[in-house]
Length: 499
Image 1 (cartoon, rainbow, N blue to C red):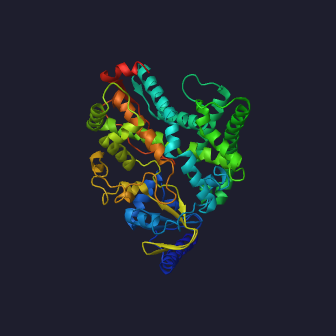
Image 2: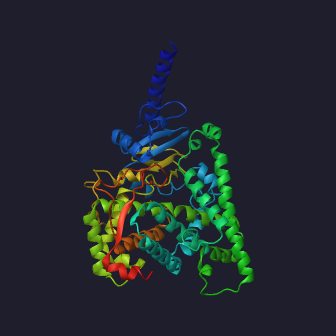
Image 3: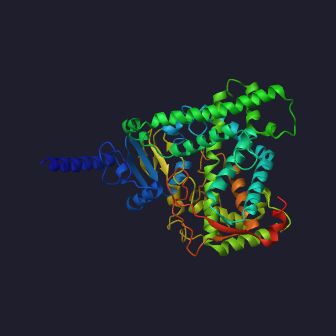
């Protein structure tokens, strides 16, 4: 009898919701939607694939219920264009979730701030002072030096077998920390052991918590699991660490006389502290800390993951690796290492990078948006306060959009029009809240990947293809990092031996 009543209740609940959605002009919604949890029971890891399967069944725009949150899911370039052009302002907010509350300084960081004057000022600041072409050029020596050091370590490794996850991640962390404070935390000659250990724990804890949290959708369950407490503890680690670096710079500035050649005077902490003197009301310590931590968080795991996917694809497709090497040999030669500016002279290699980012976007669902006012997408009503997810992975791997999407085919990007076809490929998002770090990411990915294929031959350890299964995480890591074999290219040994 009880089971009968439960089944009857679910049937009536489903029918009622179906007609309510029709009346409210909402998109199709998967069955069944369960009270309290909504559609959460339908999802498996990795989430972007699970959501893609729902879109294949129900259509390119769906209405979902993630616990107490209304969610619209978009899985077509046409609808994505509608979101980021006509409705760009209406959808420019961010949802208030745990990561934004704690890591985003109570929704005041550039990533998680609501659309408005604060966000506009932060975006302008990042574009002019932190991530401008001029600033990136001033700090290009740091990136070049760290890539050369990585090449040197590879050359000295007699084994010739390596799992690239760790060296790529450490490369990006060193680059970002040297750009921020002039310090590095991985590799040889690293000082201040206690500070290094503190930094590494902070990074590990941040990555662990950055994935989706159940408390964002089922607050009571999140409270029982203590998610808020874990976030707060890690936030205090992050805040204390970056505060220590700022205090260190203030102390040194009070003692030392400035030198134009001192790398630390070109890095971001002293730049922001100098701006604080001219406008202390805006450039508060909290604003400076949130900007630096956003840069550190967004600029490390994303680029390192793209590089790891890139080498995995190239060793599985050795003919493409050889073609990219031949282009580098022809245009750059064997008597010099490639530079960041050389990437623009390598059209086929740029196609390789685009194809890697198409197949394995490091933010498969982009960052979530939220509607700040009512609007319409695809003719359907989007109520104020609705979360928007754009399944970038589904769009970039859709056979209706791309020919043979599962095949690694860089040639597809020859003649690609980024303006005309922009919503088919969005590795950095689109619209007002597009990632401001695109220029830095492309510089690092191009220089790092280009340098290691210029200097080394890469191949699989055995006959089996490298496992390309995706793991679970905000930046879509590889599920199973696999070692690969490499050896110095004979034409590059002389240069490598001099690093």
